[in-house]
Length: 76
Image (cartoon, rainbow, N blue to C red; front, side):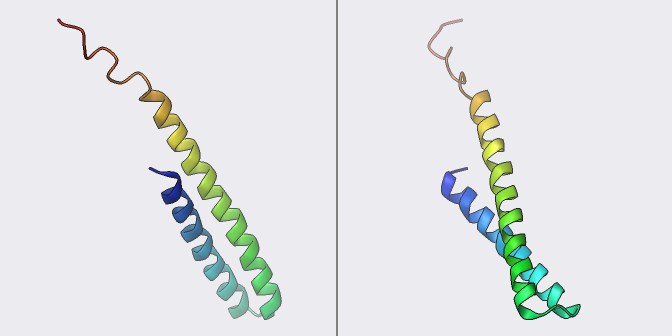
């Protein structure tokens, strides 16, 4: 997984959370500005959380594959 795809997944998760939090708050009676602020906070929290989880997952997988293929040139 490349860094650009990680950023795209993070933005998608942030926009989804923004949409759900904004409209959920607005439907339950909050004002538009406070709903917008809650949505921005949700975007930041869930986008950052997704980014951190995916970066950690990529880092763990790259460490395991570091020595992959080292012994291919040796004969049996």
